[in-house]
Image 1 (tube, one colour):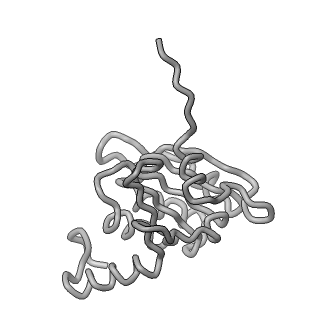
Image 2 (image 1 turned 120 degrees about the horizontal axis):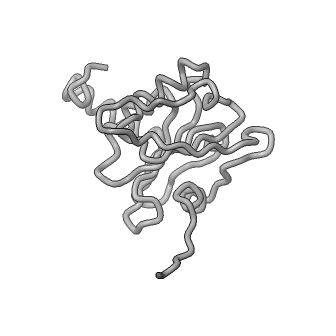
Length: 161
């Protein structure tokens, strides 16, 4: 038996972002949740409890469920402009980070994330995070890419927007 010390993916993501998952006056609580379900199943989560504007929500394996996550949180009252950070391949050399908001989360997850595992961090504590290192994209870069895709294709992922 070999024991390897480690940190959670959410903690590794925060370290990579050089950010705190809690922030005095903005995010006093941190909630970990997984959105991984059987393929095609909708995550059965308590959206009312998760839609706390004074919390940071760390969603593991939420890439495929991003539309359900965004809808569930918005329907439960979380603001559309709530900051969101998407991080693919956390702590690996080919990690990628993207900043967006709750309204754009489904589109961002579909268009900018590749095949790697992704962590989704949602909440006001993420508003101070600005992915700027090589391979990391800001919301404005993401928005420009999305606009280009819409002009060329009229839809993203086969879905009209």
